[in-house]
Amino acid sequence: MFAGFAECEITPDESIDLWGYIEREGPSQGVLDNLKAQVLYLTNSERNILLISLDLGGIDNAFSKEIKENIEETTGVSRAVISIATTHTHSAPAALYLRHCGDVSDKYMNMLKRKIVQIAITATENTAEVSLGYNQGTIDISVNRREQGVQSDLYQDSGTTDSSVGVLRIDKNSRPFAIVVNYAAHPVTLRPDNNLISADYPGVMRKVIQERVDCGVLFLQGASADINPKVFGTKNEMEQFGSLLGKEVLRVMDSISPTETDTLTFHSEPVMIPFKVPATEEELQSRIQDLLSDENLYSDVWKYTDYQWAISLVKKLRDGNEKLAEYMELPVQCMEIDGCLLAVLPGEVFSATGLKIKESLGQENIMVVGYANDNSIGYLAPIDMYKEGGYEVENAFKFYGLLQPSPRAEEQIRNSAINLLRKCAVE
Image (tube, rainbow, N blue to C red; front, side, top):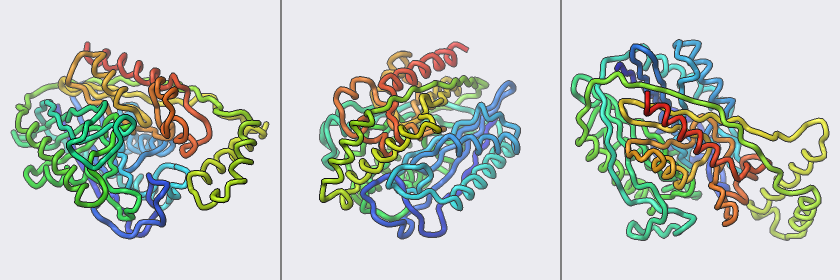
């Protein structure tokens, strides 16, 4: 197996709208720590794979498609085997439309495209023979926000979480060359009152590892739609959380003895996700009138967003020239790298989804990666959550777009991932 790794900073050089919090006021006011784009390229005699990780909240299909096409044109690596994942930090520039969560800057997006393609070229042109190994640790520092709530207490009950820390170690000349880390927790240790650009805890984790080991550290966010850090609020909590995770990664990395291998497989398929119109025009008009009678409408950003969404959907329903989208095509990608299986999924997937995928194969060597390739669908909630209600199923889609994903969407994505992982495992 041969591998190449490259990275660059993607921190904007001027004030810019940040993404992720509807309550945040104003654009960025400086930089707390730098954002990174990273590329890992793996190749053997039969195939190659290119993994990209970005310190962003999310990306859409148009951006992902353009990046992959440009990389294919400049490197020869097929767009079909390129995965673009985001860490989902809520303190990065807006790179994906989210109502009232910052305007996307064309200047910044164009800079991103240029830099990502350049480091892809660097990674593919500078490869070396490597050995690989995988192991996983465990750490109980996250909480299921739907079940337990967050209390800034490392010792509270966690609820349903995936406490596993997956580590893929890649060595060159018997020394760490790059490691891939997979863990599930929203990068929200910094809250809406923070207007400084930051990679959040993944950046701290990288720093902790690289203070001891001179290698690339590529972070892949897990199935964390309902998972938050147990501690949050300021830079202190960010550093506490990231340091704890980084130390566990170092411990796991030391337990791995990489071996020479050529095992590299990749399978993918598009999944057609149906939408549903969440309300009739009559219901929407009634909702609009109720909101207009509320004296806090224009000062309450949540109510005003609901109002804007309802107005926009009514306009679409009345516009006979523009049909509402009935489906959305989302990519599911799965791969095996020396016995380590990766399920790379779009949107915001929940801890229950990640755990079911792992349980279905009865293996521990699985990394479930969310927020990849296209995040514009928003939350892909398990069907039972539609009965429970809550922000993720009742309100979030109003920020991402107009229509609500089908309650069966999560099952479609999960079954696709399980089938593709089984293909990878038997080859």
